Length: 411
Image (cartoon, rainbow, N blue to C red; front, side):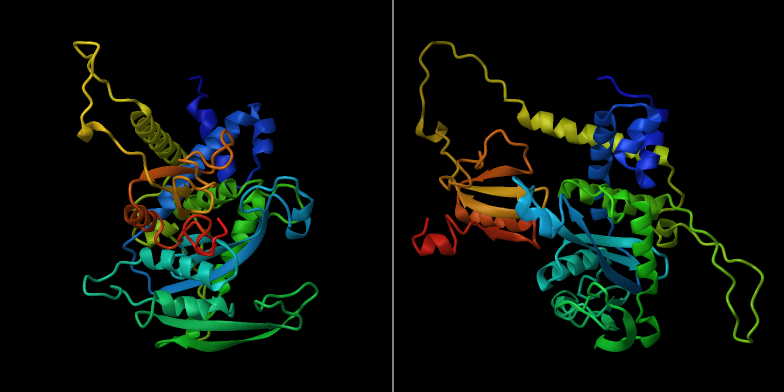
């Protein structure tokens, strides 16, 4: 395979991490768009896996917030699209960070509702180290804004194992979620108890709001009033994960301004800060872009090896005669159920083999660019168990062949 020099690939990856668009990289470095897109896809997939691997953290102070962008087109323009891709329209990005180390713990893409808020907080909880008998090694304190979906989601995920404070912001014009409506102005905020022994001093979203600004400045896809938005949800997630990994492991924060002491005097010494992953105890050294590229190549090579091994048929020895005796035990029945795992939405759904949406694992449109993969099973129970195992937070059954439509006779 004709691969570009490593020095050029490092510069391309560095520019992508800093928020440069793919077309800009193509023009500046004189490479084809396919070269940039391939490197971005490989690095993005590795970054998604890297963010999912964060766990066993001791975090006492968490801030969470959400910011919006859109994929393919804005909501109002979706009816005019002939074939909108999956996940098109407005997309909210949930972010959680440690307020002390500034480490980005987790992210989630979805809508501002209780289901997506619950999935997001479950991802946050999975990054924290838990005791065998239950509860967290370090009891966390969570601070969010006044989104109505958060209190219910917090209760479902953390229960009594964490503390929760709410910064309820008020605007003179608000939408149904409490967000600022077009033309609205900020008129004040109030700190409220959410759950447990909340700490009023830590109930604010200043750090995560600043992180939202960093994301908008460091990720071209979040720039407003441009055509740099993501065209697919998968690429949107890839760039978010790539930016988060770069921020956690490669970003050297600027020194902190001198603070005013208890006696009212300000020190003249600026406070140096550690990179987020080192401050959180995940790493002992700063990563370079060359380190990232090496890990991307190793991850891609291993993934290709596994896919090749899965596709290779087993070699069978030639029979001694032209007649082959087929025993009943040798007959392998066709799968009765299939599980579709969507890599775009990170969801799973169980279908019967004869379902019009499944067609024995071929899907509705054979030959289209896949946005997921099919897995065969030989009983409904094993298919449901696999669906839950793959996506504990977002799994379902097909309404056409197994759910409400089937029961009503609409199939």
